[in-house]
Length: 220
Image: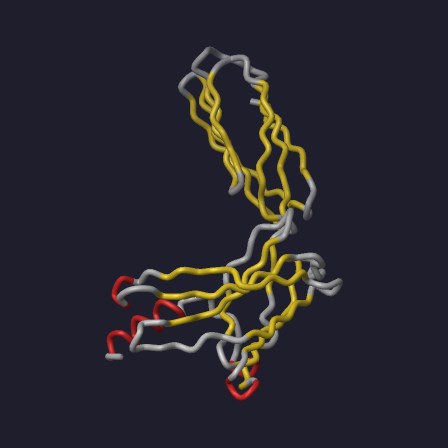
């Protein structure tokens, strides 16, 4: 394998999120197997998330190295225990550079009412310890929007947060929006109003508890 090919392979397969320090990665089973373990917790509360679905997937680069085509396939799943912990021990596939058979392994998390995680790398031939994940819980803003001081049919309102928003025109606006955001943190809610050719901007900072809905009134 030439130098360019090796560099490309590293960029393709090792470009996952920085996930561990060297002290948490040690040789395992004389290189014949790999192992990865960690814990899944909730952002903000640091509570373990039992029942989280932990997926181990295998990446295979097919065709020319320069094509950069990688196919990822889920090869095992683990349901996190009551402490949010998981563990995989698996036989990894060996690279064959002559045949362009190159493999990598990574872990990601799915759980109802949580945003999915980014992928993190599981090192071949190694025991990857403390490959932990922090999941962001769902939370909602219930925004009641009402035009209480109408001017004419060109009255305009625009709302926005990271998890939703909308725009409305007219005198008889009375609507409800649900914005889904990341919980256990503050989020910004923005809205703009235009009436009688006068434009105004507003914002507010709201704390959203995990899995809860915070009501908010915009009367304009």
